[in-house]
Image (cartoon, rainbow, N blue to C red; front, side, top):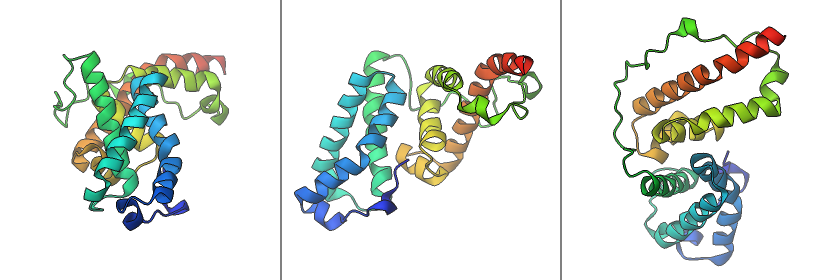
Length: 199
């Protein structure tokens, strides 16, 4: 998660092209931006391209940054848009802007069909195998759900920050997040059922 409060950047210096401040911005945010791009694209070379393009675009337009959101949120928005452009080129048939569901839909997932993970030991959630299963399940999420899940649940942005980064309403973020969690829960239920039986 990006934490701007660790070392606040001087926006005026950034906008005036101060090289030291620009370098500091790149160093401070590179890991987080790369991580988001990698999780969205599942390809390290493409994630590096997105990282590079994010900072190129940010440096070109930093003068116009008005500070209505945090600098971190603004960079996330650029990075997510860059990643989505890569996805659109690969899958032009996929609509990434319009949601094809209402806020009341839940894909017919019955809560009673989903295993409750509460009884699993914490170590089960921290194991490499579980992380691998979660990453595999996350790759299956539609891009519009995956981007919300990555920013909110993995990177730790607030609902408001996620909405700003993705240019969505807070309600839409909550809806997509719920659907992403439900899909992941359904995907992982079989795996955790096996773990429960073993324990």
